Length: 402
Image 1 (cartoon, rainbow, N blue to C red):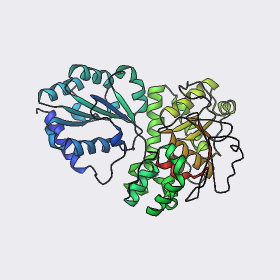
Image 2 (cartoon, rainbow, N blue to C red; image 1 turned 135 degrees about the horizontal axis):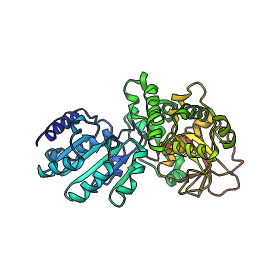
Image 3 (tube, rainbow, N blue to C red; image 1 turned 90 degrees about the horizontal axis):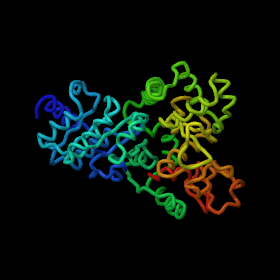
Image 4 (cartoon, helix red, strand yellow; image 1 turned 135 degrees about the vertical axis):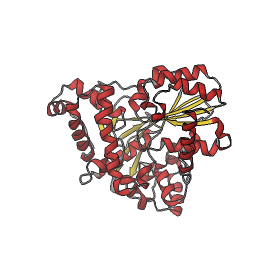
């Protein structure tokens, strides 16, 4: 290989030696790595880089001469195009090009499309932390890339790390049919209630294992980068409103849960209703919030959400640690874990409607099924219990769906 390819290869091999191998996300098996163009999108800090390097170590270790991993914020790429890099790499016998942080590279989507078209012998995997950049690039990569979404650790994955006991992923139907037996088996192997509150506070982002005293500081850095850099640059949000969006997120974190009154919010923040709805949509796009609507499917940026949650419970503790509402915390956990594989909607007869079929009410031990008692496919997700009975299911068990 010739510089800078030779330099990039040396850097990649050094980095590969440091990648942890004690725990591998279940997403590893969900990705079709044989596809010619794979994308992995997800918020910063959820483990995309580690996953790609683990894949190389586990599956391409015997053909490393044909593999190149590059983070596109690398200064060695300053005077080299992606197409030029791919061309040189292929001529040197390269077959697997792994590109990290693609959003850091100008015109990356167009160049990736060109690489795909020009070098059919090359398999390319890329990751991006800017969800807006990936969304903007869909037109350029349509019909070519298979894009997977990666989110933070599930409660199941967190317990696997903490206890060294990896338990299987459960489908929602399996939980509904066999939750009593499953919860009994899990309780024989670990103490879910002991770990659950810890997970809600600091177990979502894999970097909780590094410098735990800086955990919430790092989460706030991620929030600030999205609000102060990405949203103004990619969605045109005025900088003067950024601090108000932060205030809005803090309000959401301490509400019971947050049911937006758009007219009052619009007046309080000082922007018109249409602009406010667009801003709420953008927060949902970048996975800072999870907005619940009456309708399923495509959501326009002018639709009013019925409820707004923060994307995950750790954001609640990072933004407003002394005012976290337990009811909101429970619903945020449920929404985060279930929305990864299932469609969630607002319903007036419970807290959530899943896949337009199952109704769920979320609550504590004393929760009664008043709102859902006349519905056939309706269940209670109960906090603070080890085992369930009938239609009452332990809330923590829904953290085993991925």
